[in-house]
Amino acid sequence: MSESTLTAVELHAALRSGEISARETAEHFLSRIAERSDLGAFVTVTEDQALAEADGADAHLAALPPEQRSRPGALPALHGLPIAHKDLVEVAGAPTTRGTAALPHAIAEHDHPGVAVLRAAGTISLGKTQVPEFGLNSYSENLVAPPARNPLDPERTPGGSSGGSAAAVAAGLLPVAPGSDGGGSIRIPALACGLIGMKPGLGTVPTDVIGGRTDDFGAPRLAVSGPLARTAEDAALLFDAMTGSPRPALVAVHEADAVTGLRIGMSTASPFEAAHPTPLSPEALAAYEAAAAGLAARGHHVEEARIAYDPRYTEVFTSCWMAGLSLLDLTPEAEALLTPFTRTHRERAIATPREAHLRAAEELQGIAAGLRAEWRRYDVVLTPGLATLPPRIGAFMDLDAAADYRAQCEWTPFTSMVNVSGLPAIAVPMIEVPNPSGGGPLPMGAQLIGRPGSEPLLLQLAAQLTRG
Image 1: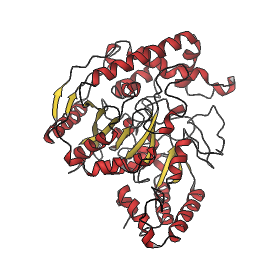
Image 2: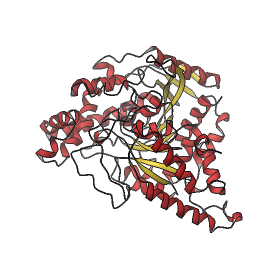
Image 3: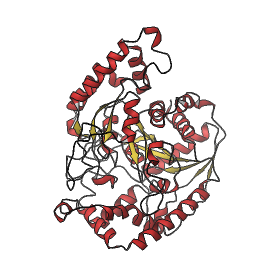
Image 4: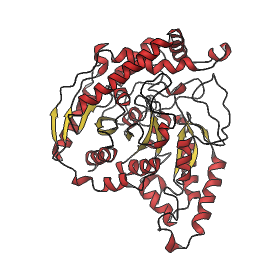
């Protein structure tokens, strides 16, 4: 049995039974990481630390009589399961770069709260994965380490900001991975790499709101944590551990076939349209239509939805997205080490009066309420995923800051609005299409947006759409 051929749920069961040891599992995935270093998925690999933790997990299991291993609480929920964390969060014993050369890469003394939850659940971190600078971009390239590459076509981006994590899962370097999503940063890489990626609603993962539900200027807190996985079951397994729940999402996915009769509104409207066009490729439309047909075949009521978005969205969202850059405490020498994209947007944020940042935050709160009102007429809203196939490595960074940002918005016109709303959403791979550059096919997917607390339902729908 090869660990890479098992789903995370299957591997989880084998680890808990002792059929596979935590050490041999860690060694297998560490070997895979070394074999595919060309993907740039990892910035740091913590091999010695991971193997020591794996040995500890095996010792814990060996100390339990076999008849006690299945008892609730006898083993941590994800005993021995290898994962890795984005290089935006602290993992004790590993350096944190945040994707920037402008800050020191200090060795973390403590785990980020979300990391601590997964460590307590028994996961074993194999390292830190590649991200864009400060997690700002929808591609995972920076000035710190080689770019993360899409394992389905290494000349293309795996997306961002969870691009390193998505590339690792798609290439079999990890069974699953936690990501974070502030404007699509889980869903974009999932769609680019053919994975399932879920953005939970704000506060569903308790550690996401330790600092409150608004940012420093009063705008809705955008970033949340969620799973990247190859199957809906695997995503549910990790999601339950992230929330600290006793497996309700995984149980729900096992019962997915019973879900029918939902009212699903489908829409290709984007809030960016008022500022600039958001054209969709034939591949994007085909995946969207395949999702609509798949949901209808499951007995759901799928209908065209007339959804109107606030024409101020692009200006207000952009202002709030970049506002936090004005709070960075950087020396002139450090500022010179920022990417041109970050430096330009930081200069604009600093030049904006605080009163304007506060006003934009208040306006974004109003836009968020409007989004929730538009979507609540349906049980679920279906949108396309990405507007086109993943661009080539360097395609965004070759542009000036303004053109780069616009190109990102045009590639990902349906994701950031969900973060603004605070609602959950899931990205689901739907079809494979020919790669214009040659090589194997590339995935295209769709997005489902749910009501508050509907994460288990979204995972059920993902299971319905991806099961044979």
